[in-house]
Structures are given as C-alpha cells and as structure tokens.
Image 1 (cartoon, rainbow, N blue to C red):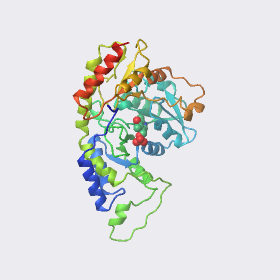
Image 2: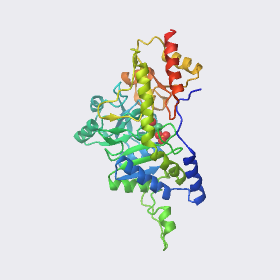
Image 3: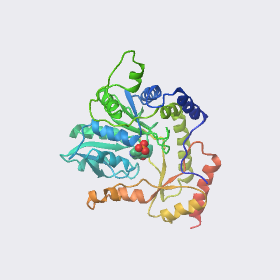
Image 4: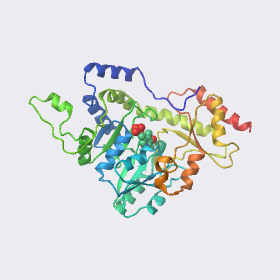
Length: 377
Ligand SMILES: *Cc1c(COP(=O)(O)O)cnc(C)c1O
C-alpha cells in the first residue's frame, strides 16, 4: 500500500524527545525558546512565537489584529476549515472569495470586489505550500487599510521573491501537524517582526500571565505574576519543540526532495492533455506540501472512480482541498453563496502520494498505474 503522506521522523527526534523527558522540564521552556530562535532565523523574521497548533496561531493573530464582532475577514472557502473557524472564533464573519484555478490561491480581483466598510483583514492562504501573490495583497491591504494575515500552515520552507514565507508580513501562522512538511506531532508558530505583536502573542498563549514559568523558576528572588488580560493555554510543550529542532534543521533538504518527486510526476504525466498540474508562478517557490492534479472536463474517468481504482491498486489518494461554504458548519451563514471556480477545482482534483523518502519504485508504480487505469478506459 502506498500512503498519501508520511512524516519524516527519525531516531534523532526520538532521542531529543527522550532527553527532554528526562530533564524533567516538559512544558514550554528552554526547548521552545531554542525552536523559536531557530525558526525566526530560518524564515528571516524578528520573532517567532510557538503555540499548540496553527488553528490557535490563527485565533491569536485575529485577536492581536483587533478583529471582533461585526467585522469581516476575507479568506478562501477552498481551504482546511480551520482558516474560516479562526475568524468565527472572535465573532467576525468569514467572507469567502474565489481562487485562481491554477495556483488554488486567492484571486486578488475577486477579493477586492468583496471589500466592504466592515472588512478588517485578508486571511491569505498559501495553499498546499504554493506561495500566494503576497505583493498584490500587501498593496491591496495598504489601499483599503486592512490587516494582512498569512495562513502559512502548509508553507514552511516555501519562498516568495527570494525570501522564505514568514518574513513578508507581520502575522504569519504555521502548522506542524504530521500532514505538513515538518511536524512536532501537533504544533504551530507565528512569525512577526513587530515587537508589540510578539509581546502580546506570548502573553495570550500563556493565560495573559506577565511572567513565564521558566523565569519564575530561575529567579533568585520571589516574583508574583500578574494577569494582564484574559489569555489562553495555547502553549507548545518542550517535548514537541525538542522534536521540532531537528525537523527544522532538515527542512531545506526535505523541500528539495519533495520538489524532485513533484517534478518527476509532472514530467511523466505532462503529455496527458486533460490533466492540469500545479502552476508555480514566477517568483514563487513551493515546498509541494501536497501534489494536486486537476482533471479537466474532457477526462474520460470520473474523479471518484479514478480514486477508487487507484485505491484498489494499492495507492492512496485524497480529494482536492475542501470548500468551507458547502459544509454544514457554514452553509447556513452563506445564504446560497456559489463560488464556481472554487467548487470546480475542489470537485475535480486529486492529491497524489508524496513523502520523503518515497522510493523510485513507488513513484514509478503510481505513474504506471495511473496511466494503465486511464489507458484501459
Ligand atoms: C492544516 C491547516 C490548518 C490547521 O493547522 P493545525 O496545526 O492542524 O491547527 C490551517 N490552515 C490550513 C490551510 C491548513 O492546511
């Protein structure tokens, strides 16, 4: 059976977790701090704030942006549902905009048409690790006085215009769920170069408490903490951070390997004219967190039939990215909203297996099975 994805975890991660457990310091402490310092240096941002996952990262990004009831935030419907949920958590309304069918990222012209006097922010997703057009959205946000928040859950190791994702704007949220390129089990990170945001994010993830556990532990004199505002328990543990440190050290290599597999797929299947491959625009560098192919209407096989036949041949696939506006959780709030491009790319695309290491035999098996199934039709 060829799986859709596998995290790249080794003895090294196991050893780091083991050592951390034996230090007796297992909640947010020195390992979280080290992971944050390494991560901010890696992306080229001033600060990185580790949290429990990307969903909580996005929630905190909404709070520090001052978004609340009555506000609107524009985001894609074509995303994992956590994107929209983070907006809903603060009482604001997600306003779903269309995507570009070739990159699966927000369409800047469609977004502009949905801006109202209530709009406070744009939540820009780098879908499947493909960088969205950050420059256009930065300009749009400046023009309409909106906050830009990046949902870079899938985009650790991706780059835009020569700089790593995480360095371009002041609230960039990452995920370390095992389906992403590097993992800490669960985990998240917010990068920023705004010291006020960094301070407040650290406060909010730790119950709004003025002193962190480590500082109190190391203090030579008694200190009492204050609770500055209502916060959350959104901390990452030191066990997770200890796993994240060697994962991050391996990130560039993982991205190189993932790109080789992605380009191999494209080269081996590019002659099939009713297939469309992910477009990497000029200036964008994708980590290929997922490899998505689109079946044009001329495709001789129904998407789900193709997925079933691949599964029977021992190859796991997944449907394309979900749409939030058609799920029960949002349907009633969307009042008959239709997003033709979003719905079409969601319904007509498939994710193929891609992980490191994926053997040449397995890659060839996916390619030949895919061609055989379609050849038989
Ligand atoms: C995975 C994902 C999330 C959620 O990340 P968690 O770390 O699992 O909370 C949010 N947005 C997008 C686009 C994702 O792919």
